[in-house]
Every structure is written in structure tokens, then in C-alpha cells.
Image 1 (tube, one colour):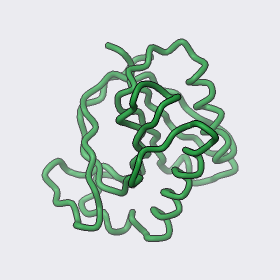
Image 2 (image 1 turned 30 degrees about the vertical axis):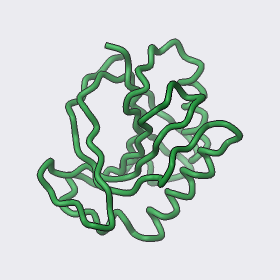
Image 3 (image 1 turned 180 degrees about the vertical axis):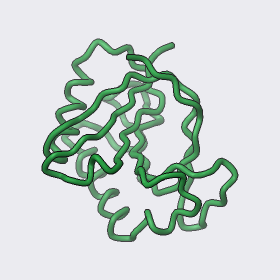
Length: 153
């Protein structure tokens, strides 16, 4: 199912350099960024959040999932909200997406969903892809996480 989403602004933190799926480097890098998000209580310092959802965004792909990409974790905010000096902002452009839902035990269910995406026939744009963590992902033994994959229009 293709779903169009309008552009939105996120405030949060970003990996200081690109990561890659080679040798499971992205699992390490992205996991460390999540630890920083939790340890430094980034959620609590993001002003004017529009919801309690947390977004994990994959973007700035050099080519596809086998090449380096950037990673960002944050929350949706008003377009005109101020970004605190210690945080970064990211605008996800208007795009069309294929939506997948990971279900099961965290974080394995998300990893499994990405394997399914990589092996699917979805015509990926490699624009901005993201995971949405909401109240359904709070119970790590029985979680649901929506994954939006940018598709070619």
C-alpha cells in the first residue's frame, strides 16, 4: 500500500558520520545513538513536540542499502519551532511510502522487518526512510513499529 506523507520537521540527534550495513556496523552505530538518546534524555529536551512518537530516520543514502547512509533520531515538532543549540533538526520532505509493520520482540522484530524490506520487490527511492516508535512499541516483548520506505513515484 502506497501512502503519501507531507513534509515534517524533526528535532533530535544525528550520527556524526555516515554508517553502513556492511559488517553490521549500522547495528552498532545506530544502537549507540539510541543509547545516547535515552541516556541524555533527549526526548525530554525537545521543545514543542507534536506527539510522543520517536522517529528513527535513514537518509542521505550514497546509492542503496549496501552503501553508507545517515541516521537521525528525534521527534516531530512545529515547522517554526526553535531547535536548541545542543540538538539538530531534520526536515523529511513530502514523499510516497510503502508502509511495513514490525511485530514481535524488540529489537529483533525490526531487524527481521528490514530483511523482509531488503528482499521485497518494493521500488525504493532511497530518499528518507523512517521507523515510528509510539505507544505500541513500549512493551519490548510484544512490540509494533511502523516502517515507512520511500518509493519511486
